[in-house]
Each structure stands twice: as structure tokens, then as C-alpha cells.
Length: 471
Image (tube, rainbow, N blue to C red; front, side):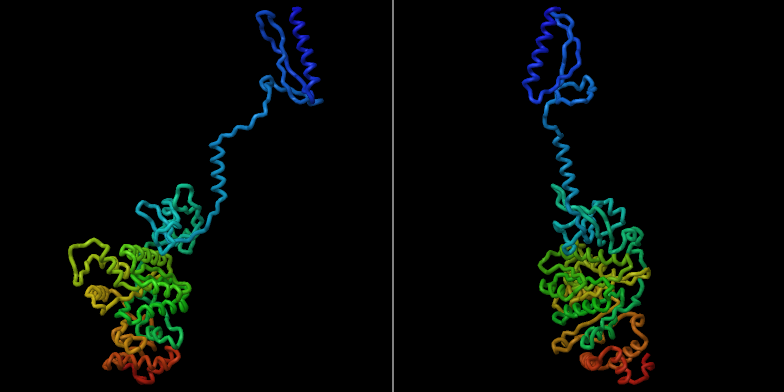
């Protein structure tokens, strides 16, 4: 026991010397615990915890927290830190608003197209869940909020749908299918007359009036001015009917004509596939245009499609569609006409509301037997025809319309009774005159009047007041 007393006193002396050497001096505190030694037996030893002196503070720390504290860096899971950083980066990225035309793939997902309805790196992915939830279809104009593509992704994704075809998303869920709508004759007129000098638009209103839901053919030989005529019709619709959705669809056309058409329109949409593109390109764009028009009609909106030309579209389908083993005159496969007729036949006035109007040019006198066969196949499908005359255009008589061949079915639904009586009387009175002379007479009288109403009054005076005998 004497040895243990000496050992404790030595430890106490060493602790006092250590306290004097340290500045500031830490305070040693501890609680005794019993240890066993083979030589000394059972003694009390002190396990101390060093900490800064805290005067007038009671420390009731438990025994398990009396281990020495070492200043070491805080360890954090590297994977968790990386995941948190990636999430913060994703949340901080911008979420742009987008508007595009939806194209649904066979697997159920879709993409919003921006570049002329064709695939590009700017397309936005649309999940099958969103497509089913909002009853989305190919051709819908979808606007919403998107996110940028993540690492390893090519396309961004649509997060939130705000509008469908400029309407609330809820309306798209309840809309009917286009095939279930009831087609009727056009009953509301699309007036093309703008100024007194625009004789071509004034003459169309008189001899071949156009209504909402019209299915019209503009039959034209080469260099007769059909492209210029389409541009004027588009400008008239933009000015007189701003509520109508106008789509100008140019197939197999020259690039400079596309640029000229774009610059001439302010609000209409120009969709094109130039002659240097493959036939598959023509066909895909045509199907997207048709789907777009159907979706607008389902939302009770009026659509006008100006197609140039139905002949070139049929030629493209003739190259793309699988052969049926049968061939018409000129090398045309009968099965190649099915989808062009489906495109042209979509034009109709809908009883439930909305309409699709299609005015398509058909080429004749090109020297190709196939073009003549295509025109003959479409000849009986339209309810309005406007014929251009090459001889009149060669004489620089514009508009170069063949008045005897031009006309509209059920024009009585579109014209007033006064207009109808005057036009019918004029046609009967001039039926025995040379068609070219008829056109010159009418164009001269049209140029001398300020508007069509004044022209009708002049016609009544020239032909007399007894038009009823011709009725």
C-alpha cells in the first residue's frame, strides 16, 4: 500500500507541473474507476477529459461521452452530396414555355414538332400518360412548360400542358372525333372582294363563290397564273376573315415561290415541301397538315387550306405507295389515289360547328397523260371549280377565267337572291357567245364599277328587268 500512495502522489505532482506549463491551463476532470493489477491489486485510477475551463458551470456529462475530442473534418457521403447537387442544378435550370404540333408514334409517346412539322433537335417529348390524360391526337397544337434535356438525353420533355389548340385542356377530353361529325353543304360565304381594282377576287365572288367547307378545284394549265391567284385568295381571306385558320400548303414547289408566299402573308401559316425533297417528305408533311386541320375542326374552328397542287401530291403518293399490280393510263397506280382523295375529301362544312375548306390546284395541258388522269379522277369529287384559260393569259387578259366552265354547286346557299338572278341571267344571255369574248365583256364592265353590288345593278340595266323569264 505504501507503493500505491507514492504512485498517486507522483501522478498528482506531474499533473500540477503540466497545468503550469499549458496556457491557458485546461482543467482536468474525471471520475474514478476501479482497475485491477496483478501487483498492486485493486486501486482507483483517474480517466480524465481535457476541456477548456468553464467557470461556474456544472458538467453532468455521462461516462460514455468522456472520450477525448479531436478536431477532425466532418465526413459526408460523397454520393449523397453529388445527388443533391444534381437535383439543385436541375431545379435551377430554366423551364421554357413551348408550343408545337403533336405527332404521336406507334409506341404511344409523341413529340412536339416545330420545324415545318418535321423532326429536329428542338422537338419536345410528350409522355403516353399526358397523351391519354388529355385525349391528345396527332395534329394538336399543344402549349405548356417543358424542361431541358438531362445528360444523355437528346430531347427536352413536356412537364405541364397549358392549352390544346388554344383552348383549355379540358375541352380536348370531351371533343368528338372528326369522322363522327355530320357534313353538310357550305352555307356561310367567304367574301374575297377587297378593292375595286382586284378584279380576280371580285369575279370569283360572282361566278364561283366560296363558302366555309367548300371543296374546290382550280384547274390551270402551266403559266396561267395559278400561284399568283392563290396568293391573292390568301391575302383576301386574311383581310376579310381574320378569324379563319389559314394554311397554305405548297407541294413540290420552287423554293423562291415559298419565300414569296411567306412574305405576302401576315398571319397565315405556310407549310411546304420543295421539289428537291424526297416523295416520302411530301407525303409526311401532307398527312400532318390534314391531321392539323381535323383537330381544329373538332374544336369548332374554321380552317382554309390552299393546296398547290393536288396533282403533284398524287404523283408523290404514286411513288411511295406499294404497287397494286394494276396501272392506269399514264403509269398511275389506282391505289395511289386513295390518300390524295382522303385529303381532298376532308373538306366539309360540319353541322355541329367548324369547317374545313380546301382549294386545290390541278394541272392540265402539261403534256403528261398522268396529270390528265389525276384531274379526271378528282373532277367529280369537288363542289366548286374554277378554270383558268391559257389563251386569255397569252392575250394578257386577266383574270384569265373560263366563265362557262367555272361554277359552284348549290351557289343559291351562298348568294343573295338579287345576285343569283343577275348572274343566272347573265350566263344565259352570254351562253351563245365565244367564251373569250364573254370574259372580255364581263371584265370590262367589272373594271368600270366600284364594287360587285354596283356591277349587279349594271347587269340588270343591260339585260333588262325581266330576268324572271330566264329562271
